[in-house]
Image (cartoon, rainbow, N blue to C red; front, side, top):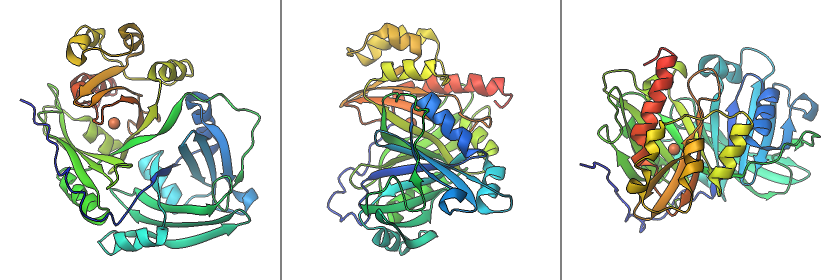
Length: 376
Ligand code: FE2
């Protein structure tokens, strides 16, 4: 019996006190930002965008911004020990620090969320240069992760004040990645509902889908998940919590190696997943593989789809259908040595869900990797 539940979808009468225009950028704190930027250009097809560091008057860090279509990543590294960024990397390894959200009014966003109980990370701050003004503010979410509110309607520069345009001779072509579809957070035991309430009460999000341990379990491990969506649906944050199983779940492994709660994966949208994944694989991105038997019953499960099954099978792309259409998805292996952050590549053809029909095959694939690491 399916325990998938859709909830609270008729809540549109309330005023959205935090209208979000989408993800502005994702910032990663990393051990070596120069090399991380090179990897994301080479392997994922991002383009050089902007740089901040000692040469631009920023003395304590170096940051590289890269872009592909509407997708902007920033890699930041500290230049010395004993500071917030260095401590973050020592504890968590490379990981997502900022999930920055585009807003029309960063001051009001901060006021509306902090008065509802958000812990402030940064008071509204005006930053100016010759290209105009950006207003930024921020609040903490799970773990040490931060939501920044970015107001850039009066800014025409490459990225932000403090950055200069970063022009390079090495510019590998893009791979068709377009925007952030969703970002998933892993939280600790019994913490999921606390963070569901945070997104509802503090940020005005709605819980649009819930999965319990009967939906997401294998022979060995289980997890629970709730999908939170902003009022206008532009931003989606699923939240995972481990559940009791015979062995250690992937969420527990993450919490152990990230040493706390944090962002588990960022899902990147493409309009042609076969082309994008073929390209990513040829550039060295490693993906989880499901057994080829997954494809034997695929047609029966999802019905007719536009794509040929053979290339999907060759690449390991998964398919799932819901009432509104179908989606194609695939997951990378962790992109650093700690088994923490990974990426999802997703193409939606009508479906608004998250691939429930693939959970079992996918989690068994993750467990095979966990076992190789000795962490199952
Ligand atoms: Fe996902």
